[in-house]
Length: 178
Ligand code: AMP
Image 1 (cartoon, rainbow, N blue to C red):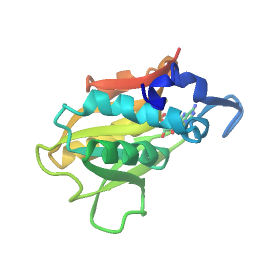
Image 2 (cartoon, rainbow, N blue to C red):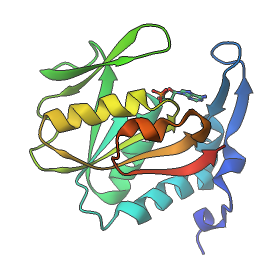
Image 3 (tube, helix red, strand yellow):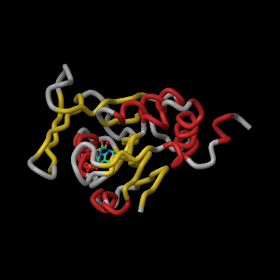
């Protein structure tokens, strides 16, 4: 048994921070999982076990905490990692997607040459809340002709029903809060 196998419940390593970034929000802080050598490794190995034989050749990570998990998973699986970033951060030609926030809208971008037509892609973030960010990332992948084979989050806030917003695309989470 490796040390990562000894992690019984990843939930034990997620910290609740009340009223962050504003009153009424219970923030799910993944830095407590990241700083633990076996818990972080366990989260990546669990995802790698699920996707190793899936034919996925790119992991799309969403700015910024999604980058951490997507990079480690891509490295572990021996596939490419693609960043989805907020407007104006990526240097080369991009596709853009606008999505709704609680107040107003935001824009995410991905490089036009980041994925190939018909490529199998996993879209990954640390937390899915309302699902708006995940959906926008999927649309960037799909507009370039690649396939979203699955969408994954380390933490799912089930009560916000984000997965419903993903319009029947396959979805998986490691940790759920009801
Ligand atoms: P959403 O588009 O509503 O699914 O929001 C997803 C993004 O916001 C993710 O990138 C999360 O990192 C972040 N986020 C939203 N709500 C929370 C929360 N309660 N705790 C931690 N991160 C959150």
